[in-house]
Amino acid sequence: MEVEATEIPGVLHVQPRVFGDARGFFLETYQAERYREAGITPAFVQDNLSRSAPGILRGLHLQHPLAQDKLVYVLEGAVYDVAVDVRVGSPTFGQHVGRTLTAELKNQLLVPKGFAHGFCVVSDGPATFAYKCSESYAPQHELSVRWDDPALGIAWPLASAPTLSAKDAAAPRLSEIDEARLPRYAP
Image (cartoon, rainbow, N blue to C red; front, side):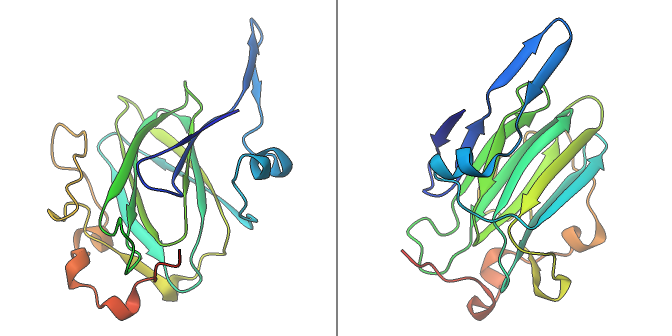
């Protein structure tokens, strides 16, 4: 397994080891000891799966309190995945990391607590997206940040306007969210 540190400390790009031959392939999408040795230490408690058509954008979402670390990957298709640092006081507050995750590459992104997360489908067909969470879903603590907030400068690789949920379309810009509702940076 190869683990790449990204532009923002804590956000990791993971390339699991894939064993393949004429019959197909095998890989471990997660193995606690091996991932812990690579610096990925969250104890995951929930797995989620979503399927989205081309042009769908989901996010940017986070949960606070009861923040979640997320280990995300794609089982079918391809997505452009984004993690935005929304930790008040962080030296990288408002900055983001974006990576293309594909079923073909089988790559993963670790999105730490304190980051808003979102993705858009960039494949010609649907994308099946899987992720592990370190905390159970708590809708009363969910926050959304506007996907096209100009202050974030995310260059979503879409040919046209994305299809959004009503919640995502109505999400506020990061600067419009009361700082008391956002997570704090703890070095």
